[in-house]
Each structure stands twice: as C-alpha cells, then as structure tokens.
Image (cartoon, rainbow, N blue to C red; front, side):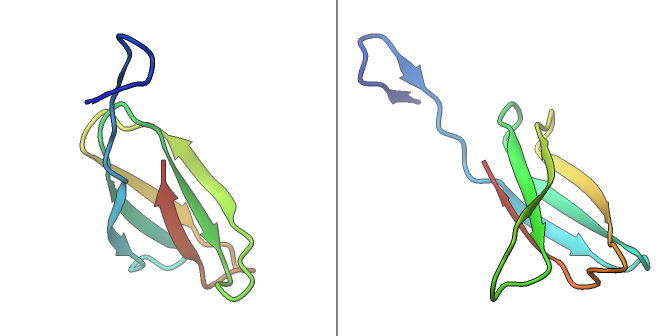
Length: 87
C-alpha cells in the first residue's frame, strides 16, 4: 500500500504479471500460463516480428486466482509469434 498525494488516498501497487509457461506442443495453438495478482487487469499482446514489431492485442482480462491460462490459436499466416504481458 502506498499513500497518495491527496490526503487520505491509498494506492495499491501490484507486481507485474509474469509469463510462467509457454507450451507450443499442440499443432496450431500455444498455451500461455500467466502469474498475476487477482483483481488487477492485464493485457497479452503478440507480434510476428521483433525487428519491426506491430503488437496486436490477444486479450485484456482480469484473473480471480493467481494464475491465468490462455490457449491462443496460431494463424497459418504467422507461424512465429512473440508475446508480452503487462498491466
């Protein structure tokens, strides 16, 4: 808990969500396991290229537990995808 600049205000700081596991074992999809703090929304984005990245939103969500599992279908047009997760 962090006390804010206004009298009586409180801020809660959540740790950054973390990619805990990435499983590409099923052809045509990738399963991502995210560790996050319940009650804090986070976004997962993907891009096919890190040299000139064009990030697209995969999902913005909130978890009720300490982990979140997402199965992302891999489009045939983008067989390589890089992921990032953030608040």
